[in-house]
Length: 287
Image 1 (cartoon, rainbow, N blue to C red):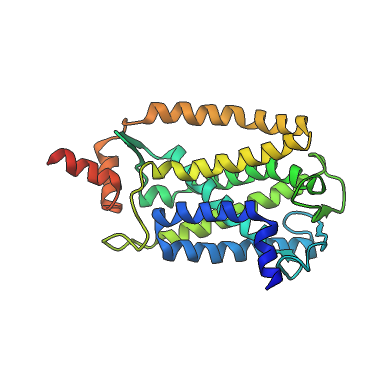
Image 2: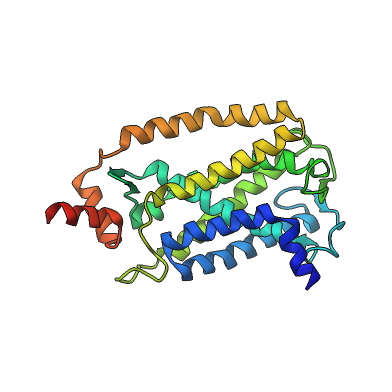
């Protein structure tokens, strides 16, 4: 019981992000698919980490330092919270990809991505989501490696000094490969047609389409904040500069796409997700 309690109290920021993921994902795809992805995503992440610490693939050779093994949950040499974090990182990356590639409909008090089954299952969403998740790790891993200087603690290290603030480039290659599996897993779970009415948990919260991208941005801001807090200004600057142009392009192109969808795009969205807020707004106008 002490280990279970310690798992939460030692990593409150991880479980805060995970709780935010649940609050965002359930209204999007429902309870069943959210829980299914949580379990499958965790297993994919755990397998990738277990393989790497034992075989060097896919991230390269690294090791965990079991300083907290008596205070929080570890499974087969891997901290539980670490593999769990892949789940919300993957989801917020995938939904950010959907926001970037989907048409946008806006009206008073709401904004909806006109995503469709075709867009959700597309290669574009898979590739962009995987790269967005990998780019998150380019910001996360260097500061996590400095865990002895903040509340994470020094829980892991690499056998050889890497080129990117101590992180080897093989780590990012492994993240890209694992991210493809994670986003692809989400797409497979979401591929089955939805029932009508909406699955349990799905609901139209105002601006729900922005929640995933905002979770993505929150993870970035948290890690940049920690990086600056420990005095690693150059490390923080490289991450901020790396994201400056993509963030500017995303916002600019989103503003240009708002309400510039075709009737066919709106119709396909409503056919696939008839409970969407966009469908309600169209019915309201007709009445």
